[in-house]
Image 1 (spheres, helix red, strand yellow):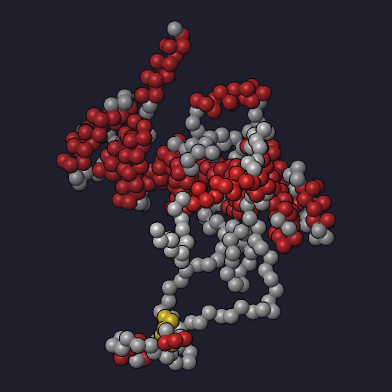
Image 2: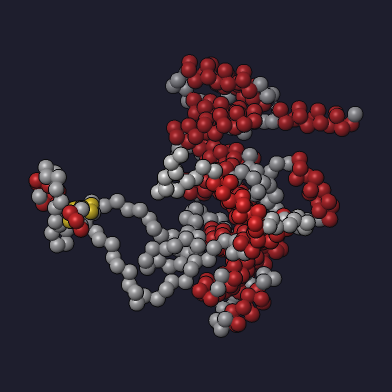
Length: 447
């Protein structure tokens, strides 16, 4: 009974929460009376009635000085109502308010609440990241569009929490590929993680597995492995992988850098202020994770600038690169350009005549006459392969031991008592399998 009474009091107090943006002016103007009535309805949970009153005020007194406050109250009523539909309507109303009243102080509050809308709907790191990505975008807008508002610090911390979840998503994907010995895919995921989210709580472990992945791919990727180990020693000096990374650099005969003082101070601050998990939480967390859909952000960084730009994911190292491109970098972009010296521009009769036209020296885009009167469009002949060029080493592929596994699976599927059919029976069954196949060069004998 006590628990039921306490829950009833809690629900009543939540429904009668005071409104954040009331109008303090004491007046009996009709528009102010309607606004005050709507605010009382919002505080008591009568959201539909409050919106009807506010819309009446907006449509009746379209020149009222409280018009902006009324539009904001409509958005707040949807926000308090909650639910997927209510939050979607609240976001649309907040966006309209920011569009029409960008200079008002309440615009920063509106953007902050849009950030909270997606933050409240954020899923765990191993689930759909759509809400987390939207929350990252909206929290960035709070920092960039309203840098002087009181919501700057809360939005900055919320952005770190969101990026902890997104970073954990990339780390779990890279860790899966690493455990499956798919080192090119693991390197692609982990390299994007450490570049995009350096404040991620397990960034040092991601760098260690990134360096190990490059080592497994051979000597061709030794430089990239050394870069990963160097970042551990320099940017994560208190990491448990620091000493092993320094040993790897010494084995490669690479210099071991000194620790960055700023990075050292950052890691010390994080270790002192990180939320510690108690023994009771270790027991209750698995049960809590089955009830609460939100992610665990206790390991998120408490300091450091969050990532304000989304980097472009690198091209996997198993993808062939264009000539002159560095391994593992993005390339192969498609560009559109017009040719300035074509046969159509220089020869007006090129459209009328359908025959082959011999392109002038240096011209591009025309038709060139090929062997036996054939034509080739584009005027570019394929370059002959250079026999003196050294052979390019094959690019690494995922699941290098897949063929061996398939052979083992085939052997394990065969029953132990299986006996191979005799060769004679196989040869005898061959003509029957061919059916009516005959030699077309031979004719049937006459009867």
